[in-house]
Length: 257
Ligand code: BJW
Image 1: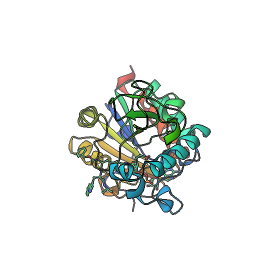
Image 2: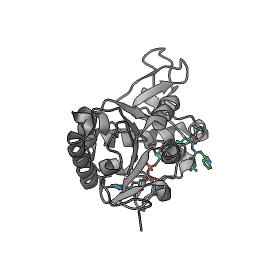
Image 3: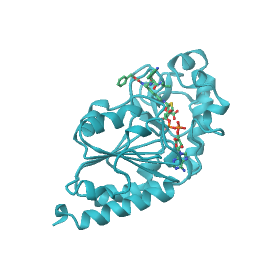
Image 4: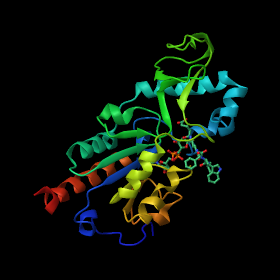
């Protein structure tokens, strides 16, 4: 019921010459590390209205509230550890011989802390600040709340905002992502609800350009009809299993000889 197309074959039976992989991750990949997702019953949007914390208008209206929201998340993200799904994706990147790109919608740094390098944070990063006075971006670890909000470069006070892509803003590195999607042989979406564009449309781009599409999630996402295969279960279990299968089948494929 969850799968469309050829569901119960392993990836390499279908693509013996599979080389280029694009992986998209969402909040679900960090859930087992202890970070809340957005749209679950106990998710972040239960306590906040999106329009109060996640738009440029909200920040202009009430910067203190927006800073409190991101300060709390920055603190929490620094307390948790990468889980087996993050580690498995870093292992796939290190051992895979073809092209690999990990695109995350997450603003935590759990992928890089697990060892991922070919990584795009399309919605920005909690540990980065963006000065609206001088336009520069820089690492930022502590609170951004008004008292300590001074740009380390231009020294202007009160103008540093979270380096996060809010609704209505352009996600980062879209050109690079689009190019990778068009070249992908395999597109894998992990732990994202498919509720937010443009990320929710990546599966259609990849599929249109000939990629096989796989989803790993606790439940089918909103775009589930666009996936050739669905692996339903927790990312911390399903991602390591999928990565093992990928690396094992690569060893026995012509690519590895
Ligand atoms: C597990 C699990 C476990 C749980 N194991 N799985 C009308 C129609 C279409 C589009 C629009 C529209 N009106 C406006 C738009 C555009 C808008 C948009 O999409 N709005 C929608 C609400 C409709 N998008 C934008 O404005 C974007 N910019 C834009 O479009 O610019 C123009 C443009 C045009 C063309 C090309 C390029 C650009 C910007 C979007 C910015 C999103 N920002 C946020 C917050 C900032 C980051 C932060 O604070 O953290 O990003 S919103 C929030 O949602 C966050 C996330 O990255 C994003 C996606 O959420 P995600 O990751 O999917 O989380 P959940 O909670 O939704 O789902 C979790 C999933 O995990 C679930 O499926 C669970 O089942 C699963 N799960 N535990 C495996 N253990």
